[in-house]
Image (cartoon, rainbow, N blue to C red; front, top):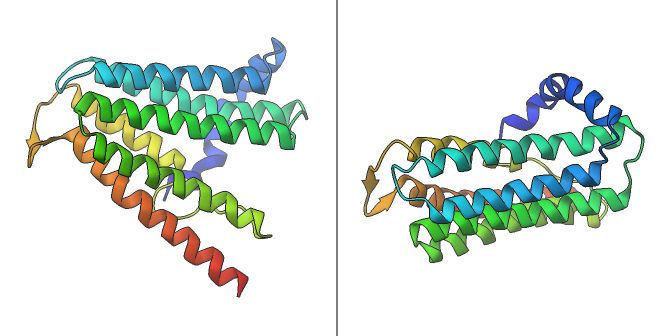
Length: 202
C-alpha cells in the first residue's frame, strides 16, 4: 500500500540503533528471535484483552516493536555483510509465524474464530504469492493493497483505539471489524499479486 515507499526514511531513523546493535555484537538472527517473541507476547495479550481494556494498548506497543525489529534485522545483516539466503529464509518463516500469532490472538480475544481463519489465510496467501512470483523467475512481489508493514501499522492503530472504546457494529467490536478487513483485503491483495505475476509471465 504506502508504507513500503518510506523504507529509506525508516532506514535513516533506525541507523543509530543499527550502529548500537553492531557495536554490541547483536546478530540479525538474535533480533529475529526477539521479534517473534514480541509477536507471541502481543498475540497472548490480545487473546486476554476485552474492548476498552488497556491490554489492547500494550498489544499495540508490542506490535510496533515487532515491526521495528523486523526492519532492524535486515539492516544489521546488510551493515555487517552477513545477509544470506539462510537468513532470508529464517526471516520470512518467522514473519509468517508472527502474522499467525497476532491474528490468532485477535481472533481469540473476540471469539471470532471463523473470521480469524479467513484473515490468517488471506494474510498467508498474500505472503505466499509474493514469494511464489520469485520462485517462477520473477522479482519478489511486495505490492498490492496491504503489505506487511501496512498490516502491522493497521493492527497497532486499531488495537490502540480498541483500548479506549467499546463501540461495535453488527455485533462486532472494532477488533472484530479489523479481522473482517484482513479477511477481505488479504485475499484481494493475494489475487492482485497473482494477477501481476501471471501477466508478467505472459
